[in-house]
Image 1 (tube, rainbow, N blue to C red):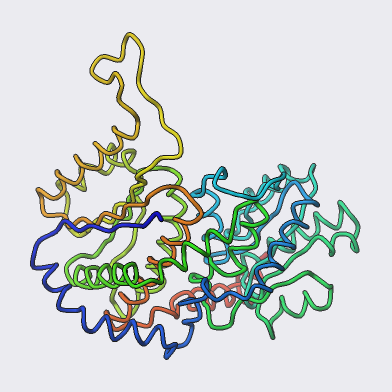
Image 2 (image 1 turned 60 degrees about the vertical axis):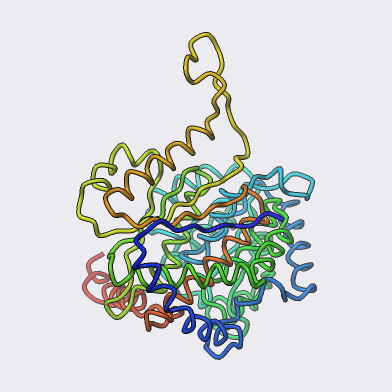
Length: 420
C-alpha cells in the first residue's frame, strides 16, 4: 500500500544529535502507547473505534446528506481545521460512497460579521443543517456563530423543524452545549474525554462532516491504523528526534506545500505543532509557505535573510490530475508536465537552500487519497507529541490560549461590554 516517506538533508551534527535522542524517544513512545499520560486517547483510536460508533456516524451522514444542500460546521481550532484539511486534500474520486452530498462550509472560527453575513446570504436559499462542535459550548467564536445560524434556521423552518436540523459533537457528560443538546433533542456524538481538540480529526469531530461530504471515512481510519505499524511509528520517532535537535538551533519551522490541496493540511499542522510545542519559552514558530508562489515574494529572505528557520517540505508524488505541454510554441517544454516542473522547483529550491545551510526535511505524500490523509495525520500527531515530550513540555495543554480567553471575557464583562 501507499506509504508516507520522510527524508533529511542537513548537517551531520544535527543528525548525530537526533540519533542520540533515539533511546529517550523510544521510552517516551512507550509512555504514549501505554496511556500513562492524560489526553492520549488518540494514540490508537483509529484502529479501535467501535463499529457501533462508526456505523452511527455513517448513518447520520446519510441522513444529513438527504436533508440539505449545505452543512455548516461551527467550530474553531481543532473543531474545524482537520475536516477542512481533509476536504481540500482528498480527491473525491477516491470515495467509494455514491450519491449527492451537501457542500460543507465553516463558521465560528472568527468573529467577523462580514464573513458570517456573506455566508448566510450565500446559503439561505438552500436547505441547511448545522453541526456545532465544542467540548464546552462556551467558546465565544462558535457560540455567537451558533446563535446567528440558529436564528436563520428558525426563520426558515420554524423552531421545531429548525431544532431537528441541528447536530452536535460535545462532551459526553457536561457543559453548556451538552445540556442544550439534551434539552432540544439534537442528534449528538461524544468528543472523547481523553482526546484534545487538535488531536481529534480522526474522531467524530472530523469523521462526521467528512462522511456527510461523501468521503470514505473507513479509508481514512485504515490509513491512520496502518501508520501505527512499527516502520511508520519509527519514522515518526526519527522525525521527532530531528525536530527536537533543530529546536535548539532554529526559531522557525516553515511548512511548505507544493500543491494547493495541501494548504489546509498545513494550516491544521500549524495549530498542532504551535499549540503543542510553544510553551515555557520553547518551540520553533510554525509558518505555512506556498511553493512556488512564495519563492517569488519571500524567496529572497529564504536564500539570503537571517537563517532562523528550517524547512519541512510536503510534496505529493502522484498528482490527481496533470497537464502536458504541447503545441507549436512549446519549444523546450514540449512533452513536459506540470508535475515535472513542480519537482524541478522542489529540487532547485532544496539545492539552493542547502547551499546556504538551511536544514531540509522532505515529507513525500504518495497521492491525494483518504488512506494517505489518515496516515499523514497520524504520523504528524505522533511526531508532535514525541517532539514536545523530548523538549520537556506538555504537548496536550494550551495555557496560553486559556489566557487570551480570560482576557477577552474580562473585556466583555467590563468596559468593553459597558461601552456598546
